[in-house]
Length: 327
Image (cartoon, rainbow, N blue to C red):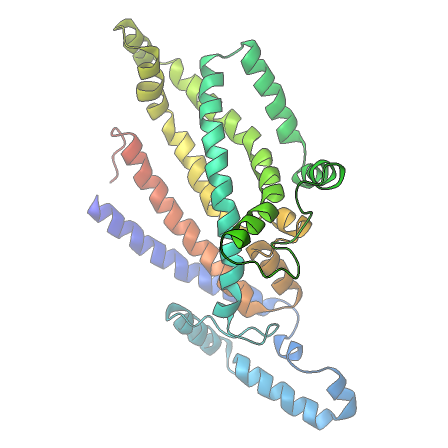
């Protein structure tokens, strides 16, 4: 197993560097000049010489005056040492920009993850055990409707009912404007603003994952070893949770790992609708402003997270099913 992990880590390093070269090259081919974003455009009409000097200084600060292979070498070296570059839009180091959005995205999505899997796994198991019953049919109808409704429509419905008709939750933002809350009151205010986007995100995710868990459980419940376990006189709960569910975990682990990796991307729809300042919104705004230092840093973070997530997924297979051997 240790040999397998070392081999996969070497693979992660190799793929990481190959993708970094490809990604860096793609962003260098994108039309536009980030250095111009750092210079006042009105200066060009007032004093062209001063504008040109400021422009050349901006190119030097961003390292754009060097050949592309040197730019890549400097960028990747600095990134590996924790220096993610300088934002041409925010005029500050990238590391200082991404901290707050990352915390905001992780905070809301971790709570969402706990709620989704805390609801969908028991729901998927019970519907599989009671398949084709009235209970299962009702859940299937609800999940089909849930899969069919786009998230932005669900968000508008939630805003209409829970923020306009019955004003329980704030419509947008992460905190009450102008408030100076501290301690417990600050936390409660933050949770109140988080509630509405959390309801939408959880509701949108329930349908597909419930159907996924149900399908995996139904497949396992048809197998011969389940019939054997029941024939031995084992209690139904032992058969379902100790035998069936454990064998159904491999496809469930796959979707859980992929879903967990995806949370760091942030939900652009949710963040845009509810003005939640997360990583999705930062990425879109940085692309619009051609702030490539921020965009490159965030994309490389997603790549590393996906590579490590795939490794964690393979190791999880072995943990949930001893029959799986890694070589």
